Structure formats: C-alpha cells, structure tokens
Length: 344
Picture 1 (cartoon, rainbow, N blue to C red):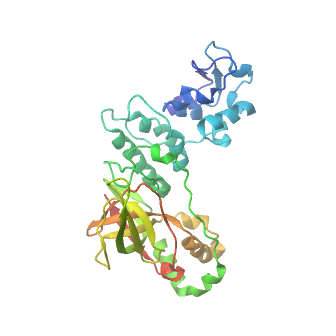
Picture 2: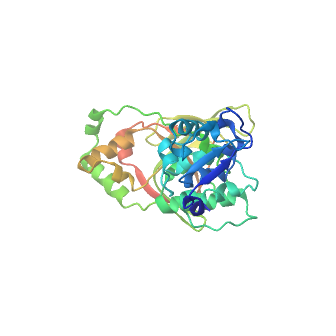
C-alpha cells in the first residue's frame, strides 16, 4: 500500500471533522494508524474540509510544500518538515518513526504494526488473527536484524509476551530519549592505559551486529555485573519496590523495580548492560577513534537490566523508568566485559 500511495499523482484527504477556518491539527485523521503512511508516502496531497472546500482556501498545488500547512502538519504529527516534504522509507532512525505512530489507533489491534511495514520498507506478511504484540514483535525483530538499531530497546512499561526485550505496544515510544550527558574531562583519558584502550577496541570490533535468530535476540554488549541488591522500601504499588543496585564500574542506582533477589557478591544473577552496535565506529573520527571511544564510554547511558536464566541465556526485567547509568570509574570500564548474550 505504501508503494501505491508513493506512485500516486495526487492524494486527496477529506477531513469530515474540519470546517470553515478551523485548524486541522486536532482532526481524527491524524490519530488513525493507516493515515500515517498516506501522509508520508504521497508526494502530492491536498486537504479538503467537510464541505469539500480547500483547507483554509489554500490554492497551492501541493499542501505538503505550502509553508503554512507544513507548520500545522508538524504540530499535528510531530514529524520534521524534511520528512513531510520528501520521505524515504527504510529502517534507519527507527525510533522516530515509531514515535510518529505511538499515539495512533487502528480498528484491528495488529494493524498498528502492519501500517508501518511500508514505512520501514520490510517484507513481512500480515497475519490477521495474531496478537498485536506478535505483529509488533515481528516488526521490531526485523528492524534490529536489518540495521542493528538498539535505540528501539529503550522503553519503559510492560514487556511483550512475544519477547522480553520488546514493549507490549508502540505507546512507550512516545517518550523522547534523553540521557544526562556529563561533560567529559580529557585529563581522565591519561589514566587509561593505551594498551587497554586497544584491547577494548579490538574486543568491540570483533562483536557482531545485533540480530534475531528464531525468537532469540543475539545482543553484543558491555556487561556491568550487579554486585549488590538491597531493598530500601516498598513503593505505593504492591508490585514495585525501591532497590539500591550496585554494579561494576557504575555509580550505585536507586530504582523502582519488580521484586528482585537481594544479596551481594558474584552469586547474583543480574547484569546491567550497554548494547553495542559496530556502526558506532563509523560515527567516530577515524584519526582519533580511541579518544572518541573513551569519550563515549565515559557518558551516562540507558542501561538494560537482565536476569541470567542458565548458561548464556537471559531475559529482560522491564521497569517503569529508564535506567540512567553513570560511569563511576573510567579506567575499569575500559577493561569492560564485552559479550554476546542471548535474550529470550
């Protein structure tokens, strides 16, 4: 369907709930799942109001190139002007595309995922009768397999029965990712042994891209073993408790989480991980890649909490808040534990 709109000469949108000089920003059209691809895929769009008058009597041949209409489209959708003017489908910048869909609704629950297949340019079958979580899970798995984009793993809320690493719906992607950036102190780079930097670089360079095999997420990451878990108090909801989490190389964290096993030492089965994507190397200046790598490692990041099940198999523990982890000791992090974990 995306291709059908993309090759159309003109797409006419009738807004039955907009009349006169009303702004269309609150129209139900912008809350429907399938209309997202209609807007993005169509090169030429004209909006008409309830009585079939051109919206705001704007006589432009294409409302997607009209500056006033574009400003309103941005307000209504949260989509940047460059994407509204000329959209290229694909799995890049996946989190933004999921955010555009996160407030939309469809009659069939699984259609919210199916309506995104063309936007992400994935070849997946629509299997009506499967769960909405299954449809979304198949889409997210394909996005990771294509580009290794781990930003879609940053979410809070209820985990999907399809896979512990995915949310149960697109709603959590409404949130714009923010981490607390800590100014980097170049003087600290000198305390990191050059040989250790090369060892870490080589270890990361040998890690594969994230991918799905069957129903398992194969995730390359830097692992921070949890060395201490202490319950502080019970929160207002019976299913959540406040815990102090101590992990190797990180500043201790206080987090509201489902019930965890308390204790200390290496017998605990938890880990906080930083997903790794080899494409990060391409974003670092090649002439100073070691410096860039150390700077990246020194920044705070959204950690993912995992529980070891057996051997190299883990499951994600979902939380109601992002786990913003801060580095305590840069030297120890450079000696970090680079692994490839299997998440179920």
